[in-house]
Image 1 (cartoon, rainbow, N blue to C red):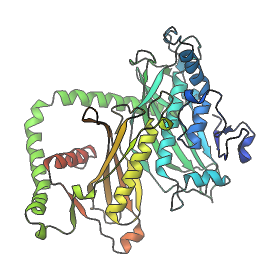
Image 2 (image 1 turned 120 degrees about the horizontal axis):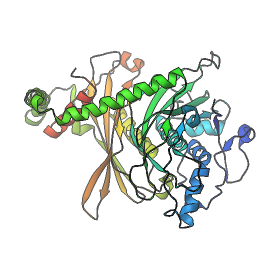
Image 3 (image 1 turned 90 degrees about the vertical axis):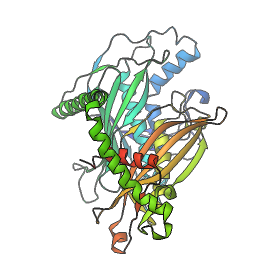
Image 4 (image 1 turned 60 degrees about the vertical axis):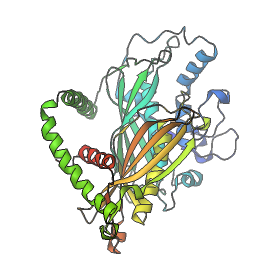
Length: 445
């Protein structure tokens, strides 16, 4: 079993261990870095991300030492791949919410639950640490690989996460390709009336990272994986089958011309159906359905300049920060749309299309894409958040990420007569986005 990393809250800038976790090998998240500040990642992080980066500091320092000495170009790439087990990368984090008042306050939302945005940030940092562990060859003469988040699979929250009980996140590598690493993380929280042997899983997350050569930037092969336990073998087979299916789908999409005509007609009918009510809003607004709202009227937006304090080990804005900011905007969008506090259900598959650098002008644009009202006991609100890297000097903007979050509302709100409206597109582009998302969710099957 792995030795859990204990997250310790810390006030002030001093040195020693914080609170009850100061002894017993706990990593103090507030401890001063051993390296010059300019060589360490930014400070806009939670105690968990700080503790994780401290945990992988030996690899990080080796890379920084090589870069500072100017000999990273001379370090040879790793040519001999190792075979590692999932246990060698397994890492866990324990949040002592029950006893650490300061840590609890950092993660508490206004409704005394854990802030999901901060948790998403921590999950990405933990997955990155696990990927670094697996790729490491413990050879000081080879240059470390860069690992970057490529995608995040759907994450479903099974129950609210309380902020008054200890929380544990733990994960390991489940599958590797030539240059990709799949990681599964489980979030568990002990019920107050249960013993420690029955940690209920409240959330499962699957991340995919890709490895790059730190000098050339090209994809690099990663160490092999040898699962040992029955569960590890099962996870390996499941991820391998999923990888093959994804590749097969890509090939099928390339050769799908024969289905093109049939698919075109079906899509045209759906587009026309979606746009019909939008035309009523445009042509006869007084006669439009009062239980519907135009998609454009659900939009929110915010923007920021990416600061050095938000960078990761490689000097770029780390994926967890982007997920955190996207979730906060999605939550606000759902809140303004529903009129009651929304309840998070899931985040769908996320692809990290383009890196975001320090100094980039980043814009997050959100909207309610569609609602699912067929289940009156759990109506669903699908919120889309698109992150744009905007370059005013060049007069252009590029999409770096697209996020899809699903929310519902509490049963008490529904009992009090809360009614959720349908969302109507007013343009063909909006209708196509809705159809693509609904098809990805399998709503047409």
